[in-house]
Image (cartoon, rainbow, N blue to C red; front, side, top):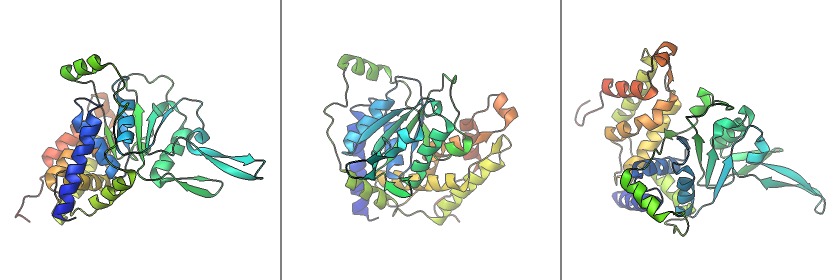
Length: 318
């Protein structure tokens, strides 16, 4: 990536954040993180209480990138075909035709994903990983960009099917919106309307693909890669984890850091990019050891300790 390209990338990224910020008031850090995941071509797990703006976030991002938006309310009786689509025999044409499911969208909100059966969860997770739906031996690409914003309600677990830890690892980022601050709340109450109505696009879906390709050209020094490797290994060595981050977690951190650096108008990744993204990218991939979990130790606490323990590279030092 050239300096001119990185400047354009940063200006465009800021414009996207500002546009979504017209809907999600006071939530710029989360908006930047979700857009980073989109440009890194990954997916986001949102764990939040009801009414914090998750649907508005998905609609605002879709409108900003001139894309499509679908929402699936996951329930125990939801079938995999309700997500991916189905082939139906057309008598007039005398052949089977594929009817796409709601997964074919630029931004898909998978609401309360842990309420669906494991079979339906697996169908969505497979599309997330492969980027296409295969029905009767025929592959149907979901398009680009494609981001899933899956939500979980942390306050109600009755009648749910917990996502397996190995499947949570499929999400590039895990974060939460949380409630807005007082000033933002007052502004929302004063408006009392759907802020996504009339939101103007700031970029085309084709340009989003271009930005994603550009971000992958950001340079990552070997010392920074070594820092990522040491962080990942330290999560496995921590005595309070029964399972640390896999190499997939390290790859996810590098992919996100490239976008983060480009959004800061840099053509290279610095250790501070890694540190800024480590919590949302790596924490949900850790499995806390049973005794530590019983004592109330969290994934975030373990990762914070790992970040303090692992020394980042310093310029001019081997």
